[in-house]
Image 1 (tube, rainbow, N blue to C red):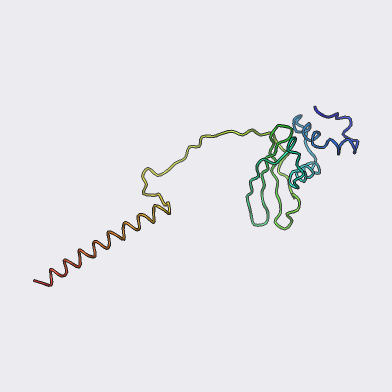
Image 2 (cartoon, rainbow, N blue to C red):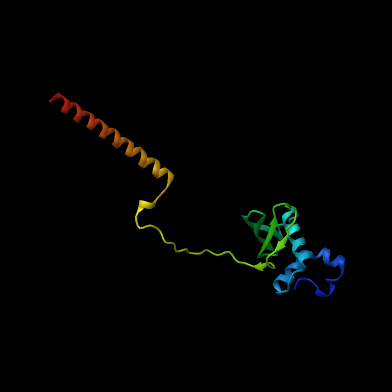
Length: 157
């Protein structure tokens, strides 16, 4: 542990060592109170960063009608953590709900297997569709010309 857990109840010590106390609680598997989660997010979101010790690395948002689910990845004393929280659309000032305590995370690369069409018949790429449409229009013009020629030849007889 970085901090002295016996001094956590001292308000001055707690405020002065807040980031390290949170780090100790997270790495030791202790839960954070709702106020500690709010204070941590406030520290991260309000740009009061000390890049040497803590910083937001990544945020992901999923918007819903009355709420926004947020996944925030942050670095704290060289380790990476994730916290998920919900912000209601009426008040973007502070997080309203927390889905869990922050958990330690690592960045990894995953190989994803996916089912795709065997042929390109289902490829709806807009650029490709535009090219195919242009080719079809060219062929239609040629067919129209051939039909006109045939029609004229038919009239001559």
